[in-house]
Image 1 (cartoon, rainbow, N blue to C red):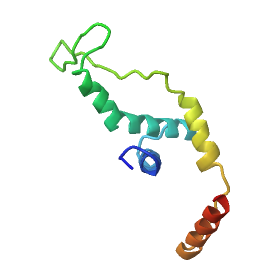
Image 2 (cartoon, one colour):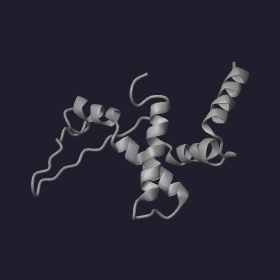
Image 3 (spheres, rainbow, N blue to C red):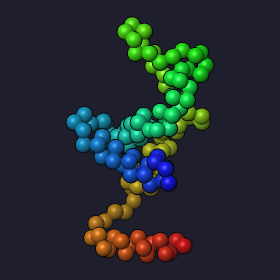
Length: 122
């Protein structure tokens, strides 16, 4: 499994979520914190960097190139097709990860619980 797929992405997103929650500057709501964490994950992703590099940091519509030159600054953004439904993604995270019954288990009991659950699914 390559970086950026499967569980790696989920754990990275949760790690970024934790960092955002622990930062000094707190966003207004839990949902905005999750949304900001996911957006930050996207901004740092290899896929986004690959899209910029593939097109030589140029706008595919007008051809202007990204520049950091003084008084000539041009920023290039990456557009998604189809557009990202941030609200839907945040809702999915709340429904499947954050708003589910949670309870503490020791490491051994937690492992047994997952083994039992995985056998039931098969």
